Length: 196
Image 1: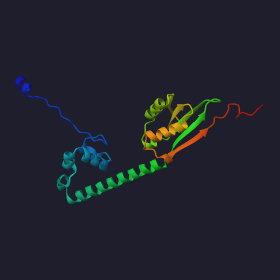
Image 2: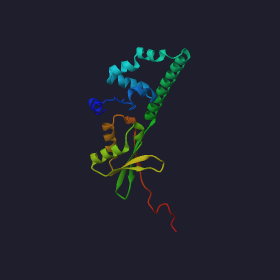
Image 3: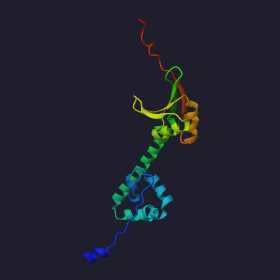
Image 4: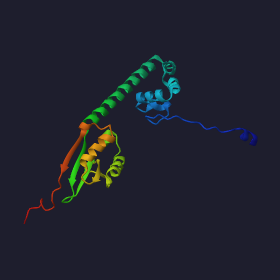
């Protein structure tokens, strides 16, 4: 028994994972981004693409199904494709209608902070962008939660124009028309209360 164990040599196995959905390519059809996964696989591993998605492979996979099952499978594949296209169109419309708002907020008499909101719609992570802004302008930069439920980046100092230029230069995913500069003055503490 000990001799049999010594003769058996373990071998490692490498598994390819999809760059789109992070599943093995054999399971991409269950991920919801089938078309993007197919394009990625065709570009990165032609042999596996031919094995999984060529006409012969698809015909072999559906040949064992009954005629009704084949029709259902085609109908389901068509529905999934339409759903994926609709999701892509919806995301494109969201990006087109989204705005990045850069706001200059007065803190004290001559002290300002600059807030940036709306970056999530373009697929950017607030923490990474805040870190980049802090490095670029050598100021304090943080991500804070907004009462409405989102997040905003707060950068110390009046750097709103520079932030606009930096964002458009570093992140080309943001269209220039979707960046909006505004100014917000905080009300004085005694102004809201009536004198009395």
